[in-house]
Amino acid sequence: MAEKNKVPLFESEIIVAKFGGSSLSNGDHFQKVKEIVTSDERISFVIPSAPGKRFDNDEKVTDLLYECYAASSAGESIDDLFDSVTSRYDSIIADLGIDLDLTEEYTHIRWAIMHHAGRDYAASRGEYLNGIILAAFLDFDFVDPAPYIKFADDGLFESEITDSLLYTELKKHRHAVIPGFYGSMPNGTIKTFSRGGSDITGSIVARAVMASVYQNWTDVDGFLMADPRIIDEPRTISTITYKELRELSYMGAGVLHEESIFPVRNAGIPIVIKNTNHPEAEGTVIVSDINAPEASSVITGIAGKKGFSVISIEKAMMNTETGFGRRVLEAIEKEEVNFEHLPSGIDTMSVILSTEEIADKRDRILDRICSTVEPDSITIEDGLALIAVVGRGMVKAKGTASRVFKATAEADINIKMIDQGSSELNIIIGVEESDFVSAMNAIYKEFEK
Ligand code: ASP
Image 1: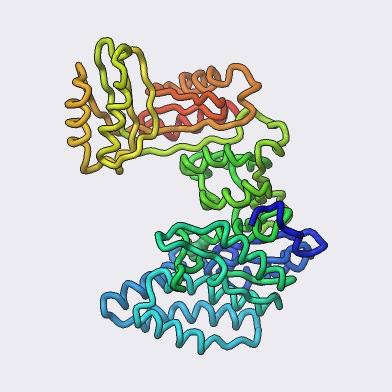
Image 2: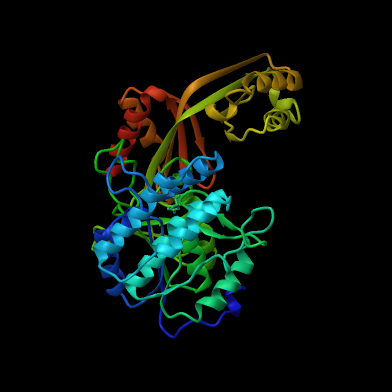
């Protein structure tokens, strides 16, 4: 249903709040969630994940359910595994002191998993059961998303049908809990999104009900300027655009499922990342370009990944050979490999690829390139790390690239590749994997000021 044909669901503003597994892993967390939800009457729809880890070596309920499915498919007993699932829920119910008995649900789910109800079905029950408990605890309606969140026979998500079905159903509920992560196929079988997909459900619901904000509650204060495992106490980003977020997530910065930005982005709904354990923190607001406030700093964030390989091709007069680049890329495409970057010179061209993706295909890729473009030389080198320096503030600032190079040069780091998109939203550099951490730190320090 196109947004313009929709009448607002209710007279008042609506907020959709999604709580991740770490925010719903035990009774204490459920209490915090209740405080958050009841303190803001605009929160009408709540999307829960399945219970996450309570401590370092704990198992996520979703992982236990995948294990149940695997055991059942191998003809083994699922009893012990399934008991660890039900005891997670029973201890939450006991902590909350609510009058809820899930025995019948457990019996049915155990039976269905034993009778080949499917891998996605098994995994989805994590959110389903958590949703029932949360709805009872909040005194909200429970809405099973299966009849409304639809996938086509080829497994692709049906956004328009879903939008209209959800809109029509949710009009009937002033307050509801809708489990994340799954929907259904045309024949009614359960289908999940990819891992972490409750974020996507939240975004789809926010679009359907025309929420003013999509709150995504997790266990960090927001999106950080850099990975805290690499940079000591990086700053939290207060506002980031969808485009900047895409660039940073692609390079490995992850708080939100990548696909979850599309439904709300198209509908112009901001996402706010908030911390369930620290709700006073402002969090990070993700907005579209048009609504973005002027950047307060040149750089919004830095992210990076190791594990890239470079194929370097040299051929004299390459620049005069029409179709040279296309033929190289075609050779790579034939091996079903995506290329990441393509820096090139007059007589040289480099293709950057994921080392893991080309693992057993490298010789074939090189052979194909050699036979199609007959280069003077071709080499392949592993061990490259890429770092993306991202910021909408770069367009206006002069000298950003020179600051990146100065910072890395002063840290005695050799830059092996440079790529700047013409949108001036990011500068990507390639360094030796052994220089990765020091390069990230040098660049962060330079722009932190
Ligand atoms: N429970 C699912 C997972 O662990 C989905 C989610 O948490 O968003 O991937």
